[in-house]
Image 1 (spheres, rainbow, N blue to C red):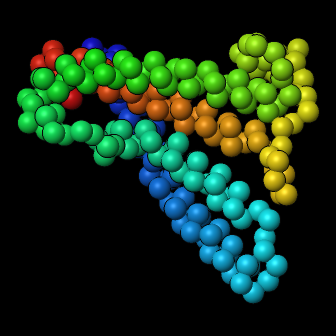
Image 2 (cartoon, rainbow, N blue to C red):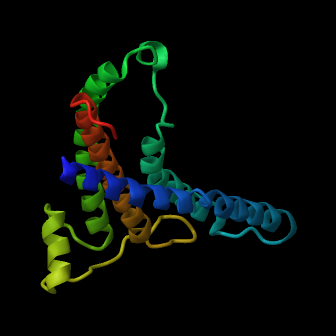
Length: 188
């Protein structure tokens, strides 16, 4: 149980501070959109603003998700759930979080494959590619670029997505362990 508590503390700490930093990304997004409006009104429109705003929004959403789960501020259907006892909620959460963990595992695998593709890998095992990058047996190929006029490389935002999905997966495991502790009657 001590290991579970340490895991919960570490994951909750990382996601808390990540979420607190990332929440200020809304001001970065507002600045980009403000510049977009100004440049379209008074100057030549900037090519980068719309796509950069999308990238910032993806980072804001994906990296802020674990913080939202941790605070319990995610969207729930409280029609029945809100009236249940803590023990009944823990049983239901214990069961349903397993589906979320499975979904996030599939999503993480897809994000790894997509990031490997954006770095020029056309094989079927992205873990082999990333392992090869670390050991030096693989090389980065032709970088994927966005098909827009700005044409930024895609791998940085895909790495942000991998980090966000991984942090969400860790937070879901933390919530699973919290439910186990609740069912054992231990305080969290």
